[in-house]
Length: 326
Image (tube, rainbow, N blue to C red; front, side, top):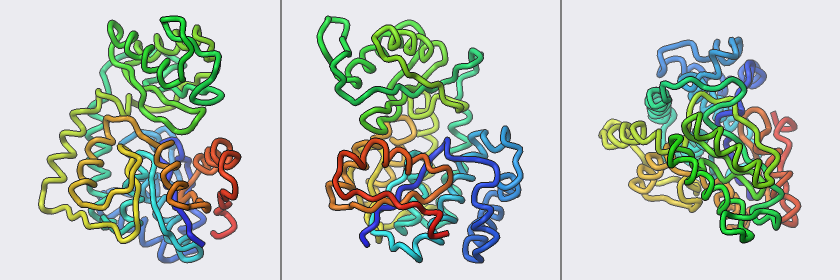
């Protein structure tokens, strides 16, 4: 079986995730114990016992998801050998460890710094209740015939969202496309006022379903650039080793398979503030001949996304129910 492993990102977390693996598998427990040691905190206790509000904080959520992703991988890879990896946002670090481009310890150090530096970039602004810094724009597909741009012409969802984001960024702060997840799911991110204005505009343009995400900050936007600069400095430190992946891996920032250590470093910097090219990444995996996909992590967000937006369009594509292998 030629399997592509997909590692989820923020939003997949829940209190108690990975506890069943921890209790059952010694090699999975080791991953959590290394996490406690490197992070110098009992992250395992927080993951298993909460509270949820604390777990959801970026500074805790990112390393928690990273560790759980790899705990799943330590079990699943023994049953379903991995031939390609890709990870959504923070999941990219799990993918790199699975590909053996990064050690678990080095990746944890990077994840900790990433979470801390991104937290520092969260704007000091009042967020309107019921909204957030990010919102999911849901359409029928990327080219729905009912979307009209400001010139009165039919346009794609991406064209319309970019147009609206540019207009709302001119006087309300920054808002831009953060993730292109599938043919029906695009995420926008930025200053709260600008995101709210963009949501209002898009609803007036006949996009009716838009959901605010439960996140702390405007991730994958220009507001995260200082965090990217911090990551760049850390990656230049000789203490962090990045190797050529032993298992092919697809990068977030480009949606292409890359293997040179310098390219990986560049990708890890750019993915902090640039658009996550998730749709392109998954389509690249399919183009490479992969028909079997495995979500290595908690929550089944990628399992649902693949089944909903990719399976019907790609004959023979199979998304495994990983609970059968745990």
